[in-house]
Length: 369
Image 1 (spheres, rainbow, N blue to C red):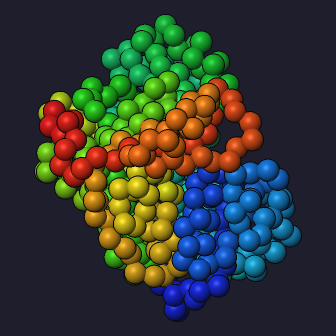
Image 2 (image 1 turned 90 degrees about the vertical axis):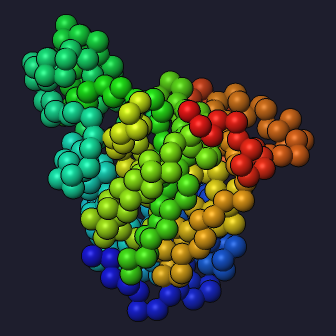
């Protein structure tokens, strides 16, 4: 369990962050503004977060001595991506508080465990089946009407580690394409739009959620998020209530991203959960007083959660690969917040930054679908 801290962290305390990517970088920025020091644990020496952290532990996740040194240097530890090895998080948790707890990692790292967790809570998802062979994949496809998406149970993100299938005859090729790894077949969702809820829970159980965002993907990667999402008040409230059920069931502490499909009949299906700050919540740094990054720091530090109110409508768009060349022009515009991640090498499909364009509250042209 995530027991409430004996007392909130004091100014000058050290927040440890497992992972040194752009999310760790943005968490370090939020922590610094609130008077906290940060220590990053990340094997890569040139990670985006390293230049902003107070300390950088550049060691492997199975280095027991380095994990111990890191834990003893931190007052509380969190993580910026869900593929941190559970064993590493558990080793640190034996020495200092880890928030969210390692159990959230265990659920989210395995797509089958995640879908089963949601089903056991009575939360709707697409149909899903465990797959451990090409024959099992073919049989599962028949049960899905011959169409679906096979995904490796572990690892893979932004469209990686998955193959869409339109017939059972494609099962053998798809099984080899994912490396014959333990997998899950998910049925196709007949959805109108995709939305997400970024929400926070304090260790004492207090909850707060930002407005749902409407997400558009290209090539399996998030391209942009628009707020407000063009859904009814009922759908918005239901999505937020589902997010709270998930957080409570995990005894969660911190910010989480919950992704949904919204069908044409306004039915919600949870697609996946991410136990960390979330790409679809980057708009909060421009359109809210308290960003998702500060909210996460507040939660894990034992401080009161902040307001999730929004002062503007907005569109957040990722700068992927060569899109980063647009940055000088975007910076010259008066209605954009531009955030670059400090990555030295540009590659196709690599998230290099994002920008959020603001507009007056209530003026978004996509409000109703």
